Each structure stands twice: as C-alpha cells, then as structure tokens.
Image 1 (tube, rainbow, N blue to C red):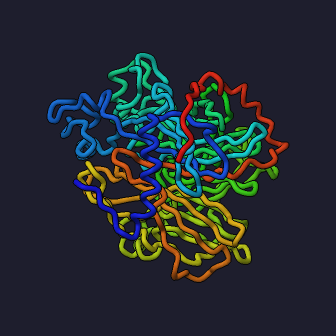
Image 2: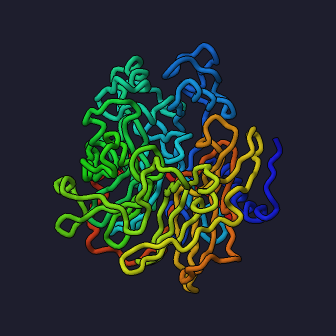
Image 3: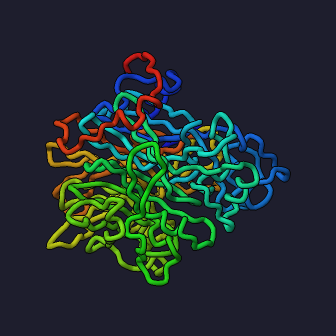
Length: 518
C-alpha cells in the first residue's frame, strides 16, 4: 500500500521523516547528550518478528488461551487476540532526542532487550518524564525486566509478558501466568522503573507491582523516590499480591525489588472489583504534588486524581497507608459505566498553577469525539477546575496510510502529553496519538507525535489553532511517551540522590561517534 497523507499535514510530516531517516542511517548510534535540553525526548518501540512470535504457526502453535490463528507478520499477528484476549508481543525500547524546533534527531539510544522490553501493542505504556536533579537531567519510564533463569538472549518477541506475573506469585486464574509456569521454573517479568541520565547511562529498579497487567509511567520526585502508575490482575483472583500491588505506587531507587501501594484501600465506587478502581494511566509531578488519570476499564471513575501529603510531604513507603486519593475538584465524578459521552483522560501538562491541559484518548463514542477527545484545556477558579475548550482541529477523524501497513488509520485522540511555556504567552504542546483501524489490535497501529500552539490566557475556543504532525508515522513503530527537556537550570539543592550508587555505570552502553544532525 502506498503511503498517503492529507495535504494539510504533509509539510509537518516531512520533518518527522527526516529524523527517522537519520535513525535508519545511524542504526541507533548515540550522538552527544541523550537529553540535550531544549529538546523533545521520546520513548518508542519497534516490532521484531523474533523469538516466540517468530515460531507462531497458524492452527499449530499453542498460545495462552488456545491455538494461534496467525504467524508473526505484523499485519496479521494481532488477529491472535481473537483466541487470546490479552495477546501481546514484547519489543525493544528506544529513546530518541529530537530538536524541539526542527524535529531533527539529536541522539538515539536502544536499550539492551535482554535487560528491558516493552509490550508493543500495549498503547498505555511508556509514559515518560524528565526531572532536573543535582546530577543533571534524568528521564524515567517503565518496562519489563526478565526476572527468571533460562530466558533467551533477547526478551523481544515473547508472548503476553504484559499479562504474566511480576513476582513469584502465580495467578491460577490468569492464562498468561499458567503459560509461563509450564515453560519456565522462574518466570517473573518484573515491572521495572528505568532512570536514564543525559549521558546515556541507565539504571533499572524492579518493583513488586502490576502483576498480570501493564506498567504505565514513572516520575522521579524531589524526595529521591519514584512514583509509578499501572494496573494489575488480568485474572479473577482477589489475592492481595495483586489487589494491593496496583494503582499509584512509591518505589525506592536501587537494585532490590520493592514498591508500596499508596492508599491501598482506595475504591472510587463501593462495589468496584478489588484493585481495578485504581487502573491509573497518566502521571505527572507539579509544584509539589502528584496528579494522575484513569481513562479505561469498566470500574471506578474515569477522571483526574491527586493524592494527599501526610505530614505535608509526598507519601513514602512508611506513610502510604495514611495517604488518600481524591478527584480534582471540578473533574468528572460519574462512574465509568454511566451512559453518555465517555471521558478517557490520559496525559497531563500544567502550563501554570491554574492551567491544566489533559490529553483525552477518545473512545469511539460519537458524542465523546465531539466533546472530549483531543486536547482539553482546564483552568482553576475559586478552587474548582473548569473545562474551557477542547482542541481537535486537524486531529480527530484525520486518516492516513503507511507503506507496508495494510490498514488505514484514523486518529481518535491523544495519549501522553508534554509542553513548553513560551515567552510570547503561548504554550507549545506535543502528544502521541491514539488511532483506530481494521487491525486486530489498535494499540499496534503506527501512530504519530503531533504538536499545537495555544494562547495561554484564552478561555474561549480558538478558531485558528490546528494540530500538525511533528514525527511519524512509521511502519512497525509505536510512539509511547513524550517529555520536553528544558535547558539545564540551577540544580535543586534538595535533590542529592547519589545516582552513581544506583548502578548507572553497569548498564551504560559505549558511545559511538556520529555526525551532527542536518
């Protein structure tokens, strides 16, 4: 199929294609600082027909839940979800640093897939944040680190890892757990926090959380602790190993597997399934507080949340039980199962203390597409948040084709989000897109990074603001998270973490020279 893009978006797409060409030419070479400052850092993953997925034979190979109906070809492999409702394939993780002005590639780093992978079609994964520390800029996100003996040299191409166990607890009601239990004596896939420094060194901290489901995002707070969001339990058990290892977690950096659920008794609604009310996806730290979203699943309330600070401080492992999760005043409070337009919030960006942008993934509901899907702008007045307008122009309903991909894509909303305040009173925002198509799993669709400029002080819908494509789409590539790296500022005196003790050096890859990007 030939690649065609609407004329209104072709100019913007040229920037993205130039950056992607540089990636191909350098084969993932590292150039300069991985986090340059005044740049856009992106998490992305590339599909590989290797490992277990390469051995799939239709009507022959056993997979969790039954027998495969398709081989490992990217266009058809997702049809296996008709047999295995949680079907997934692991893939390598790449960080790329792009010029925020031109989109040119500044640096690229692919992490060792024997140490860390993601689930290619798990569209909620790879949320990304950047923190200024005493040691410089540090990026954080989450992935799957094989924890067992006897795994292949690469963890890419493995099936259903996003639904397998994360600890030694075996969920007897989870088909992925049973699949791996029958193949490996030690089968855990630790949901792990990754911290990457500007020079490309990285450390991995395994958690105890999110067994049987997805890890989504991680931030490094000024107190030196990681905070993470995700979901657990693809089975039906109510074992505490799953129902109290989900939602918002606090993690101590280091080599030891650890995590503690914050507000472990939280239920947005009294009759929620244990653990599922806290199916959180987006996460950000701003002005001393944590904010996160829920926008999928049939339990709980899809809205924007925050958490209290026991003793005036962010929750720690010692105070996690006494912290309380609550909905930001003014944001939706209806149950996710309520009729009417669906509200599906994902990424968050604070432009200032009274202006919050929310990326809404969209649900396919026609009313939702007209009201919520896209980029919402909320402002705070008298202690309550109010929705001013939703930016959708040249985004919702836009279609495109990608060479070698058999399906036409339709943009349905936005996932992860970041932004930059400009001196002229505008805000530049970048986000990864959500799509729908005829493929077996829309999470595997080739998506895009889009951008838009908004006037910070506006509270009425603008008539001239339109989205443009910043990067992508690319066959076999899924974009996950985006984070704007501000130029290096004075370091925070409170942020004395001692990163060298966390094992960055052990995971650091060798640098290789590369020409400066055009």
